[in-house]
Amino acid sequence: MLEAVTVWYDSGCPLCRREIALMRRLDRRGRITFVDAVGPDAASPIDRAEILARFHPREGDRLLSGAEAFAAMWRAIPLLRPLGILAGWRPLIPAFEWAYRRFLRIRPLLQKLLS
Image 1 (tube, rainbow, N blue to C red):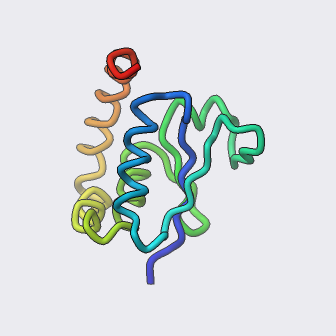
Image 2: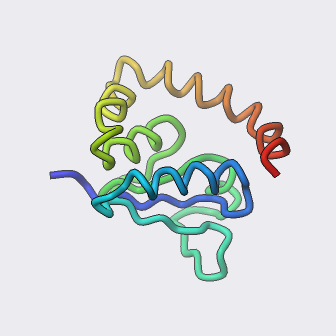
Image 3: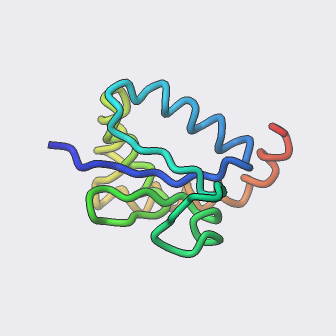
């Protein structure tokens, strides 16, 4: 059985809004709870600045970050599950984390392009 997944996202980020909209469309079984981390009622398990700086979901009772976080979200969506299993495979996690860190460097540029 798949663990419940809660995803905190930045609704002030145009890139984040687009990605979450896509994930919501793909999550036809409603396995993911999406929480707007900048909303007034957004209770998060860690500091809000940290939640906004890096992608954080909770899978079951584990709080994840970065590439492992995306892997958890993808595993919850049947269409993306194979990618999520691959991204969560211990030998590949460093490669996915490396790619995620590179993405974080260009994220501000992408946000400007989409706003």
